[in-house]
Length: 235
Ligand SMILES: O=C(O)CCC(=O)C(=O)O
Ligand SMILES: [Fe+2]
Image (cartoon, rainbow, N blue to C red; front, top):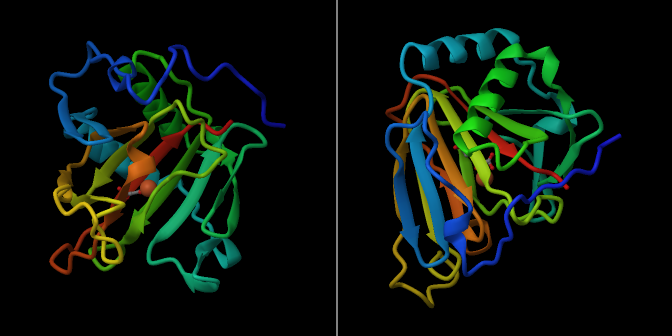
């Protein structure tokens, strides 16, 4: 069974984004991405060759979903996902995502996951204990993830989503909900792009996912695989 735990060590209000993250002693440099209601930090968590070594361990040990769990529902229709996906986490935790109910496999099946989770929690000054990670593997630049917000109600509203990238660097793009194809009422809020390097940690803090979509677009010139791990707190 999923256990309930105290999730927020600090009081959070959407007007006080600055309380959520203090720079970790282990991180040299934090790049901050700030826009209206966009509150994102970026840092290198694992240097080479450590990042390459973790990538190889995950390639060896990770078992991705197949069958129904490898599909997503878009506008009521099921499609194969354009990448591979799996979730790991605490016993009994699951995540409802794009029409699927993803049950977490045990952390202990993949020792490198526990090491990465600890490094992420340390980088965030142990303010959050993550009980779930969604993992996506992009075999090359044709695999991708469309524009979405991670705003499911099961996600603890006060906690960030901590995204670790390994393998090939890929572009990642934020778009404000009021400056997308169908609604351009805020054209002053331009898309924000960042190249996610191997070994990097991107911390998407509230209220980013309420206001900004993000995507990993197709990049035909990318020939090598990438693994992304989004650590989450499911309440
Ligand atoms: O692969 C990435 O960097 C994006 C992953 C993502 O947005 C997600 O898992 O929700
Ligand atoms: Fe996402």
